Length: 451
Ligand SMILES: C[S@@+](CC[C@H](N)C(=O)[O-])C[C@H]1O[C@@H](n2cnc3c(N)ncnc32)[C@H](O)[C@@H]1O
Image (cartoon, rainbow, N blue to C red; front, side):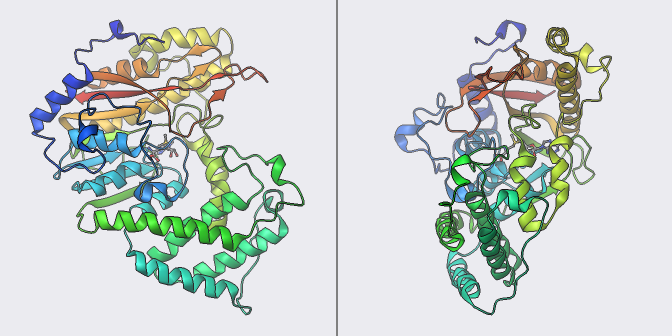
């Protein structure tokens, strides 16, 4: 679909926008880690990052749904921030923005995230540890695991036997006990995150899916994973990634702050007019269906933290509850939302409520972001336009209209192809079995400026 630029007053090409911002802040002077000289020529036009590896540094420690491509975050951060910048990501997920701030030595990077497992992951991924120390502790864990006298309790949680074979539960419980013997908190957490990757691989789930479902090919006699072998593989990969990461960030002074909280609620810990730049990617409005962050995190978090609250997470995320009123003020602020809601409502009242609840929640976070951000500074959102009841929702334009009422000017909307981001390729726009359409094959990058 061709973007409907006429409905917006977008004066800039991306090259224009970047040149203006870069010259305003005198950027492009830092040395660049990702781009070779040849790549620099493509600086303005490269947005798909087809030939780039997203699993570099600590980014590659663990999967997470709809992660940023690190190169994309870096490109934007390089232009819009410098070493004195305070950066916020109010849907920080697995921590991509925070890691990139650390690599770029920005002053401070703040993440807000409601998923406790994602916060844990982001903490581990932004904590550099000397790799040789990790190698030593890895041997200690293996030694503990193979010790015949190791004491451990078999892990118990609801339905555990549905997701894991009996023998696997025993091996995982023993491995967890071996890791918990480590006293140094950061090192213990590093290996618990590796354990989480192992949990996904040795479970009976399809570990390439974000939703929890059993994998037919694994429910056979022949599926007998060796937990220690998997742990060896994941740990060795992660230690190598840490080694690259540690080298890059050992002198970085970035202060990292991860707030486990709801970004719809104004955070007292962040002062008004204190943030220089916001880079974020909110959920696309389908956390209960297509990209289920809670379902993705559930088994890992129950193993690591015995936390059952993770069951209700998807309902607590943006748009998770649909008890909304069709007279909500935001409908007045966005004619496009009004028009599209009417179309969906004609087909399903419930689905229209789902959609409206998502935008009401999103509006609350836009409002908070407006308070945190300094005047004349930028807020960049990466979002997708999804299809509900065959209506292609223009989240890009709706955000632009809603944010205008708060005092943001839309400077530019870029459209990039989603190539290496892990997203389901198809969904059901009507919720009818067998009726599928392409989900977001394009992503929007919306550049807002606080007036
Ligand atoms: C698209 S993902 C962000 C991924 C992130 N950019 C990364 O690279 O890992 C959206 C995130 O928003 C979080 N989220 C959803 N609703 C939230 C809320 N109300 N407050 C804070 N975080 C929320 C989800 O848990 C999810 O981690």
